Image (cartoon, rainbow, N blue to C red; front, side, top):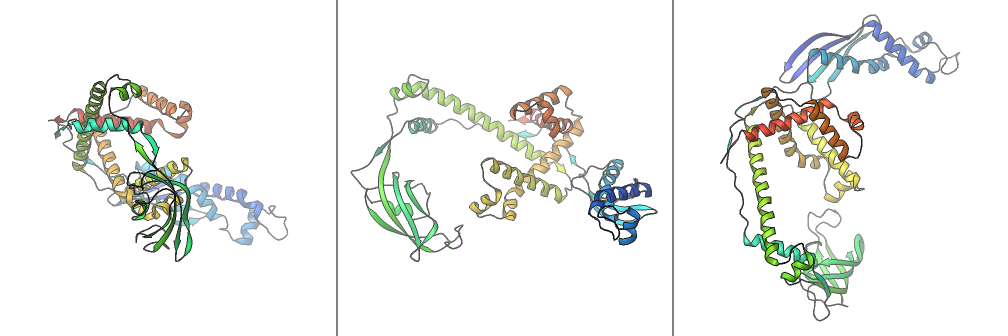
Length: 426
């Protein structure tokens, strides 16, 4: 392989002219012949037994050219990119411009390169830190949570159903007097007022008593995910089998002593206040960090290729698909449930992807500006941490993650700390 020329044709776009010599191309043709000969039939020979020269005479001299080029061009392009010193953000677009037995292969690779980045004024950024005070209402909510954990469910048999009750029902839905798929349930527990069912359904159960059988007339929302039901009137036949309500314990010393690590309600309140103050402090720190990193991006100058945003968006969708698979749900099933398409799903991640790409570029430039590096000890420690988190060995981690990439992530983390430690926090 030889790199004939490197031409910058646009911002972040470089064209490489590459040649593969006749000798290397001949070796690739021979490799293509050996790979495919068992499937080739030539008159007078058993299948797979014909010499290469006879095959080329029968089918043409260039019979193996396409396969040979496919075998060889990828490595040639990678070598050329390395020789040109380019850092790419996507696979090059390769055009084969000439193929000849005597001279070899000529090609042009159009490369999208990582953008040049400038970032200034990332030290000494002024930011106001505001810690939300803990109010009495916040403590009351913590007490309510304790009561929720110890709530009793009691049967209601002396009145009709009210909002806040949980009813056990059998139901079946009909459109135009025909039952529709997904509209039937038995022994279904529904909290009235939770909004779990379509508008009007839960309100229509209020006022009915245990043992009643009745109809509910509703209209599905215009944007309902099932097209056949969207905007359509329907009738649900209901059998109300039981009504229950939550009975909360009194918030007092007895409740605290029986259900927590404290003896009195006042001790519980004091601990809750302390924990909420710590939480609010962390939230304020996170808000400061978010502000500082947003300012860092504002202070960055770069013409960023769209493909970088596309790549990050696709990565985020793939990460979602992987999480869903772990729960036994396919991405197609998820899109069906949420009424999304592949395109609308990507749109939901696009803005976040752009922010992440910009921030990473800005931080990497800080790393360069400051000469930040990760030590060998830090890289090894991070690999061990990854191994422990995934219950595998460090050597297994290294098969999937390069030490160089781990080092880059550590350096970027140090850049974040530099921006934070140099900030002027008011």
